[in-house]
Length: 396
Image 1 (tube, helix red, strand yellow):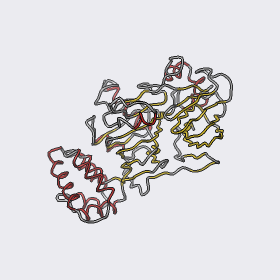
Image 2 (cartoon, helix red, strand yellow):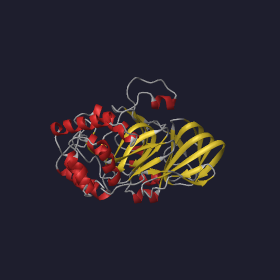
Image 3 (cartoon, helix red, strand yellow):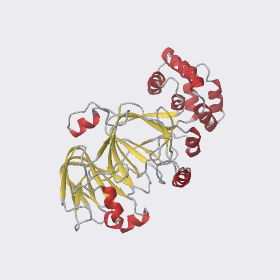
Image 4 (spheres, helix red, strand yellow):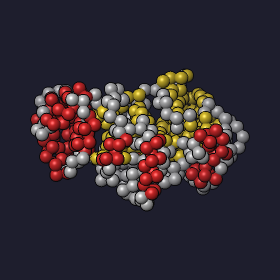
């Protein structure tokens, strides 16, 4: 059957103190509330009505919870993790490994005896972390490398002192060299470059690259000696509108800047960081997983599959995401494996057909904004009723 989830909110420093409370209709605590995790990741699993965690239930009987096919495909691990993400400050410049890179990196960290909860450990698990971020309001992000000609045009327009070497590398198509060179410089070498860049933006009198200038000016002020500011010069600056998305496969360099979104990823916490953070940074390891192919158009829009139902086509093997919009009616979705339903506005009833599953006996769950429910992989189709918007995440 379908059961409500009790989810953990992570208090990372970059989180908004108000966005998630406003969505949930509760009073803010005054502390950052950055992410609400929905799923069975071992570091913050959702809790079921009987008090068991979803992680423990999956571990005890993967086939009963995930369905036999999904349990076999993913070696008994819950395949995805969903989040509500609320950023008030920029997240780190980061990328995520491929399946092969994650396996090798995890084995290396294990062999080196680095504790799994150590701040300087790169690989928390042996899984990749492809992800999609769907905006619930205007959402700002840096996503993938901008085509080199556009970055050269930006640098030519601003003309910051000390950037001739970077510009020449980009003119010659040497993106990898430009990225690794500047990201590897120490903070004493970075500080005058960031200052020069900030001055160039402040004194620029043209109209071009308004979003880029807005973002880089803010980063120069907030991170005066951080090489991540220079990395931001190389990345696409996007402003997503409600329900626009970005899909981030392995190797995509990105940084979320500000906004509220719904995020889905493979069930991993592997993050390789390069800047804009006080957390562990490992530029050589980051560079080893980065895809340096420029990305001309990073914005993904949903494809309508039926009245009131749209899907985000990513090709990701770990999850599929549908958006369901209801106006006092209902929609039924087939699904493969376990499913998580998250309401983001209005009120939605989630009903799953089929016999009693391994996680409870609820036949229907009423969800308001910010609330979520789980249906096991042994259940039938999921029906949503009511007036509102919900996302349904399933294994593919």
